[in-house]
Image (tube, rainbow, N blue to C red; front, side, top):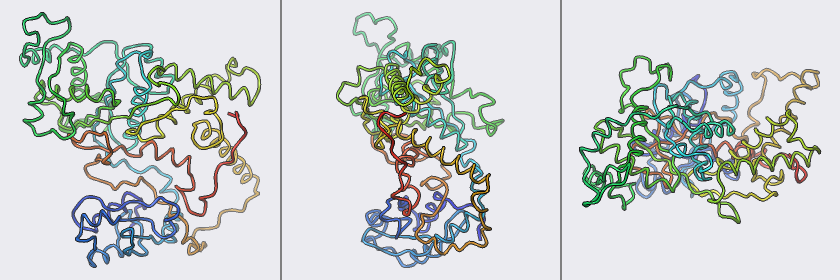
Length: 511
């Protein structure tokens, strides 16, 4: 029997491989009403695309029924249903495997993407804080989360641009965003020379404005390389400026000169050029058109520009009942900070905002509320913010304050349980070998890992809308909204028997 710890990704990978060559078909079941009868589903439409009339050959059904492999959960049954091919695991066996090796599951898994490099580019950080729109703030927080998630998976990440504005650095520190700083710009002399060789005159007999070098036709480049899919059809000419070349110079510099201590797996590695690196541009939907121009300009001016580029386009941010574009990111932070202080004053009384002991607490609560709001919705979707005072309520499940408050309550319960254990109020947990796991057939199996199969390619596409597909695709491992759904709907993410359990609500205005 395989001793590797069981995982969702490993099981999905084996299930898809068992159906033969082709794209992924299986999905992890998460809906409470279906978890009692199945753990994985191959939807009927996906099966129709793979097999004639969606009928799975018997040999594949037999292979699924006896599926085995490292990290693959044991299968109880696999049968066709109106919804598709339904598969249920041997849940008692899964529980026994997990509880018999708790230490292995408590230890972080070895990164599967060790040695991969990602250059993460967030153009919004080239502006000043007072000019940072809410949609741009969203890209900053998404990029920060993406960097943390990739690093947790063993990926070497470099962040661009290095921030030069001291006010922006201060604001990022307020947001608990770790981003590199720089004192000067990268030299664009070489790129400028290449650009002047390629440029056609854009003045038509007129003098060019200061900072403008000329105009380049990008449409021909797209058509020549057959990469029209994903590009805006209105892309034609690009006005080349000194600022644009400075941006490209910084990207090129970061791509070619990785810090020696950036990742132990890169020491002495021969593949330090562009081929082994994925460039990810995290931009708002308003900046998408300009970023596509920058992408193509890079290809036009640099022979060894990276072919693997991905645009992660974040949807717009709207404020309910007000034009969100009128509020800047610092104003939004101050607004949420004031709400947190007000809610705490209602709960505890007095002006706690003036108490140094509470200053750090209020800052953490404010940032957590903002990040929860910005990251709990899938990045490509439009985001609506509620700025009314009622949005700081601990009732309902839509505010960051609600989740933080109830997490604090749960932490208190856990601490109380720990103290009770130390006092001997609870019996010692019996040996795993003495437990009867056969009663756990309705419990949701405690499998580890994300609902994405492992892949040797590492990063691949989720097929999300608004994401350009003109480059090698990429998926963020462990997307933010999945983690927040775990907080909002614990029952749906754990087990049917706990689906009705919710953190207790509190009175209005508590913090």
